Length: 297
Length: 258
Image: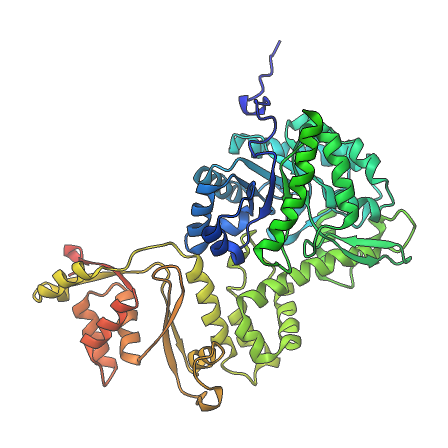
């Protein structure tokens, strides 16, 4: 008889699935480095894309060091290629491991997607066919990442524009199975839920309810762009270049009722507004977080 | 089935389709939805190049630049998720891109812009401080034997055209109309602290820095410049390079290489 022992980092600690505070954070953008260092805004945490900081030196590390000394930090990967058919890029995993050793972030997250193939980096989060082979592959890759990083990672639900004929499970069943098997947590991207459910004619409330609430370690909120598919049906694009939409704020309230007060990021990658504008959105999220905490007290 | 191979090929080739593997809730043509990915991938690569090469874009206009960047992205997609490295092959691509042939200095302006981004993210190092420098200069007998370690962010750029003046004019320094584009120019691109500097160099200073970069000691470097450049002021050149932060340390060369 063999006894399977889970590594200690997969046992939920007192802080559950993340060490980030149950507050609102914002994406850290180079445009705001100086303003943050000079004005020290009361922001719950900052989040950076890992790949932007896989450089040797210069202003990015200069400012991240100073900002990290004052704030909790989340590192969010966009290039690990968790869903890739190819083997993981070990060199990339090592570089990310060194970045995490250097900054000791409270959280590390990645995407349920693929982004590289055959040595080419496609710089986008591409969709997966939800079947058994994909599930096995994704879980193997998450095991490999968690073993090397010696920490539980959070996996983000995707925005998608197509579905695959070969899929044998729903996205939410797939995500639940990945979490159950790999022990990773969930980065619940509420904007992605709204985008994906609109694009595939699903009920976002039902989608949300079918995800494991206790695994959620962080929430993302962002803006989207509107287009149409070939039949004129709405096709939403996960653009991260606009304020959070009203419908996403509404869905966020449901998410908080579902998962409790969870660290929440205002995500912005394009049309970057001045820091106070992003901070105002973070404060709006924080109000809802506080209300959620008080309701439960 | 190697689905991601087909998907990847279709992202870059508008004549290839993966629609047969896709479905949509309303039975609409999945090709329109696949185009979102195609557009995301290409426009993100073009935007990344536009961020790294802003003056190159200004010189040829947005439309031309986007077409050139699209051709480059298809032929040279990124090989690494670290996008700050992307575009190292773009200047050489521009040089061979025949529609840009009428702008002969374009590739060198692009080189300058790429070196600036590389310097921005290069390892940090402190340039030689005044005290250490003074003690080296006081020992005139030993001075020619010293070898320089150069700043890790430093790149030397040489152009057959006035690429540096053209770039500088787009930063508000100098008038484009006053530039003789056939005038060869040299520069040092370096980030001694947090900001990247583009330091125009005379031919002598450039050759002197290039000799130091090859690992020649100060004495040998002076000799090789004097042999190739007619008018050369070694004291002024060394002063200029040190002031720019090029030298991080001066040390005796290993015995066997003196």
